Every structure is written in structure tokens, then in C-alpha cells.
Length: 256
Image 1 (spheres, rainbow, N blue to C red):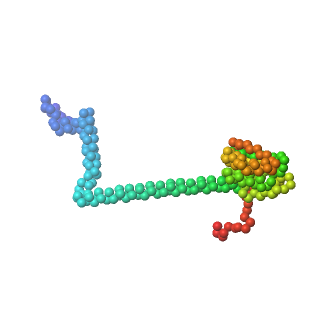
Image 2 (image 1 turned 120 degrees about the vertical axis):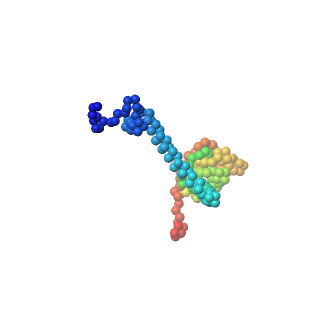
Image 3 (image 1 turned 90 degrees about the vertical axis):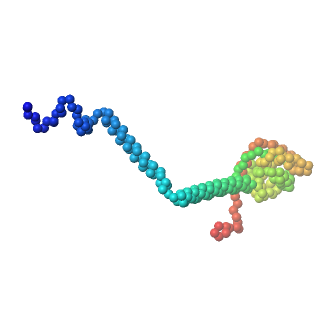
């Protein structure tokens, strides 16, 4: 019988199957494709199981609490919600107050600006444009009296005249001075000669009616030997202005 090398594996008897240990060693050394797939699936399944256990543990934080503990937790959550809702209501109220305050401030500012603009027109410190009438007074057979001119201007103011100028050179306001002189009138110290042209801004129909009533301005001027012509215009430009006056005696109080 020939000698067998020392390191050679023992041969199984002819016809015998490999032992279980031999098969396991063979599978571990050279795994088949099916074994690899099964191993991967088992690894994924194990990872999913561990993850599910951890999530379940986190979701069951309150599972071990007593009933009173759960009531206390719910009460705390309810109180926090009520405080949050109260803060929301308070902040919304503050927002509405700020909106209202801003609206009131803007309304007051708009009103003040409008009042300032109206006062500037009345004071004659700004040019103005608008509908109105143009009155042309021509001396035909006599001389226009100062009282007739002043009555005409006063009637126009009474019927809503917003701005007036005479002969395109002098703005007529409440402080305007009139004096009769040779050859015409001194209006704020400036000589105004006939014909006298009054540009008046306001409602054309109302202003025209202010001149036509019996014993009114037109009748007085006719008695002076003058004629009056009235033109109603859709737009009149009054560009003459007065320089704002300065106080001669009043001074701002200290600290103002």
C-alpha cells in the first residue's frame, strides 16, 4: 500500500457523502449566490426590527406613567396652549391698535395739510387755478365809487369766492387795503386804473348770481355810470400772491 503524504486530507471511503462539518466549512469558504442573498435579507430584517423597537420605545415614553401623572401632563399642556392663545390675542390687539393709531395719525395729518392749503389760498400766498368768473368794469359816463367796488368784492366773498385778483397785479384778501385816488384806486398801495378786471375763483353760477340781484353790485355800478360784463369760465389762473407777513410784536414763548 503506497504511503500517503502527511498533509493530505483523509479520503472518505468510496461512495460516502461529506460530513456536516465539512459541508459547513466548504460553505463558509466558498458561499453560493443563494446563501449570500439569504444573508443580506436576514441582515436587513434584523436592522428593521432593531429600529422598530427603538421607535416604539420612544413613542411609549408615557406608557409607564400613572393616571394622575398623565392628568398632570395634560393639564400642563392645556395651560401652555391657553397662555399661547392669550399671547396671540394680546399681540393681535396690539397690532390693531397700532393700525388704528397709524390711521388716526394719517387722517389728522391729511386734515392738517388740507387746512394749511386752504389757509394758504385764503391768505393769498400761493397761486391757484379753478373755475370761476371774470368781471370787467368799464367807466362809460362816470367814475366808479369806492363803496361800489367794495360792495362788489364783499358780495363775491359772501357767495363763496375762494380767491380774487384785480387787473392781474394785486391779490385781494381780507387784509387788502383800498383807497380812491385820481385816475383809479390804490389797492395795497398800488395804483389800479380802469377798466377794472376782477378774476374770481368759485362756483361760476353762484358768483354770477351774486351780482345780478336788485340793488346789487351791478345796479350800483350802473348808477356810477359804469358797465359790468361777466364771463363764466371753466378755468381761471390766479398767479398773483402776497408775501407772508411777519409779526411785529408777538414772539414765541420761551421753550416753544
